[in-house]
Image: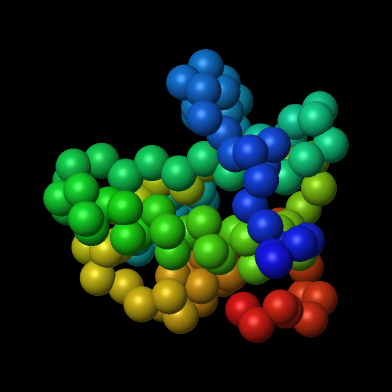
Length: 124
């Protein structure tokens, strides 16, 4: 049982209107392989949306990147800033990254903006 580290439906951004709203009003962080867009929400939750276009690779590669990003979010959710929506857009070559590469790239980007606290990590 995963318990507190699970990635529940309430923590997912699924609707196009949410992606458009956050994309328009949010702030962006660009890294080598990802674009992170974040915006405050009034839901009291940390929510994640992930996109990977065909430029990222085929379906297998896109799904792999999305799994790695979801795992990073799942393990670090308690460390992320409260009441924020995050959209992570995978770029070219992101599918080639290992989980530790994804973790370091996202941790560095979010930490530099004060969006990720330095609390002890759960295996991650």
